[in-house]
Amino acid sequence: MSAQPTQVFESEEALRDYIGRPLDLAVAKAIDHLDKYCRAFIERSPFLCISTASADGRGDVSPRGDGPGFVQVLDPHTLFIPDRPGNNRLDTMTNIIANPNVGLLFLVPGFEDCLRVNGRAQVVRDDGLLAAAAVKGRTPLIGIRVAVDEAYLHCAKAIKRSKLWDEASRHDRGALPSIGKMILEQTAAPGAAPDAAVVAEVDELIEDNYRNALY
Image (cartoon, rainbow, N blue to C red):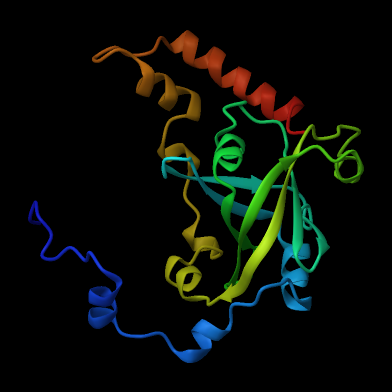
């Protein structure tokens, strides 16, 4: 493999000339609202990824997951995503405050097609919507309100190629160390190895957080 690519595309025109043009339907399928099929997809989805960017264009993508239908469709042009407890980095939230443009990718286990929604987001506290999102008596503190600019279904090729939902595609989690050990190694001084007792303590803290602070 060479250190330098054969070609770097620096214009859309050059890229289009090389790859080709999309089919008319691939362009026309993007709609400016959430229709009955988008709504039905979102109601079944327990997982999404949200892409954001900082004011200076640094990109980020973050997972969001909960019971099917955790994202509320308020009307054909508006979504609400409750924010569950996390690590308080607030990468997504601070990006939205600086740059409201977001992209959402909804997945449904067993479905090979996906739903993509692009729009403009706000970080909000809406007591009524947050109360409706309470789980086990715990109410989210904030949420993400998205004004929908476009929505469209994405074909199944990526899921088919990845065999994402196939049982045979599942990996043994034991193939890698615990997340606690990996992070401790990543943040250790060069050449230093984390103490086994510290790894065990961090792993237990993480598991305790999973048990007691999902909501």
